[in-house]
Image 1: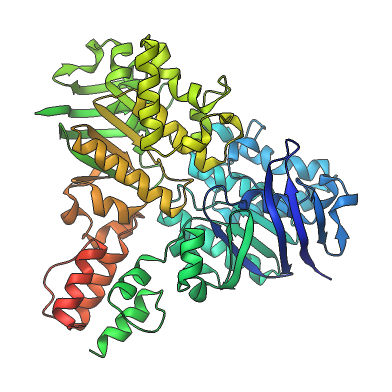
Image 2: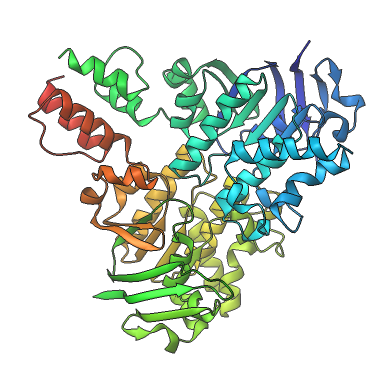
Length: 267
Length: 282
């Protein structure tokens, strides 16, 4: 099956600390999924299970039918690209262009293919102006796009973005939003961890919510944000418009501004 | 009383051609909460470096104009004294953790230790901050093994423990979940109520709308807009600069379109809610 499948997965660190318990999840080819939840809920360890950086303590993780248990992280990363939460964990070359090309040379691709991939990744992330800079001289928020471009250039069918919205301005958020659309058109799956609830409402229909090491819900953004149980247990928030609608006692599980305005027109 | 005064300040980093900040004039008053916003690359972090005296004490480059901290030229300040006067919380929490301490407790105590604070007082202050930031469960953990959000809260605790009069805070909640973000803003507000002057760089505009007294908008190294929060954050032209406006502001403008009687623009959730209740009669 063309999917990432988590089957009853539990993950514990070598010191015995359990980070994920009984995760069950299927992410199919071309799907776009947001993962939300409190700090420490186990979101990052869960996505690291998907690309083989973490191996399950019990249960199975299958990537396109291949069990990650029997594979090296390098083998799995041909299918699943992971953009780290901290860009500095992922950067080591002397300029941005070299950084993006590095893995492509390692994969022994020909020069024409390298150029095609780099220009696509650069266009999608809008970092044209930074290619000849040292990655560490690039502003933090842009540096995150450098690491995204590095992973995009690998052209894996699955891409994981770990808190890409952190520290982004309006332009950065729009770039991310366009990127998600383009990747979906290309048939890629994108799994995004984020704390930005407005970004979730605007860009995702499927939302996986985690709390206390477990997946507690896998539902639409609207149902997720209007479930009292999920909001309370995962300690997430509705987008501000949803909160206004709730406090006014309005019906219709509103999460968008245009919905609220339409409703108020009737009064 | 003025806490920091900037007169015609321009700055460029060493070995670069362009000025990162240009013609900055502002008088910051003691005890106020200033929100600093602007698109990425507009000079916000450099502005923070200027406010806390890292420019010119650490970053040399070309500084022109006057930077007065409590009336005294920044160049005449002793840089050690300045670093205790002005606390700074980094944008990237992964950078702020020292990496040399094995427990969160020691990490929080590190700054005080460096100041030569007596052991008893040191413990007392760390315990106080741990309580304030609800870090009890983390104090025995190794700071290097914490999650991004936890590191951010520990970094915050280390600076609060120093008890500086002025706090310059660069995106303290970028890695935090919504609940911890709200908590951090409440704590920052509490620090303001204790008389501290707050400079906060933040993209979470709904929270700036809620808490800041004044807002400075930086764009291409200049102050593009400034003034009372309600005035600045109801300015639609900020969108063209790449600055987000609060959801409440945008909703308020939408409501004005359907109800001409609405003559003021709300910038916070509670204001817009009141506005809807009054005018539309929900």
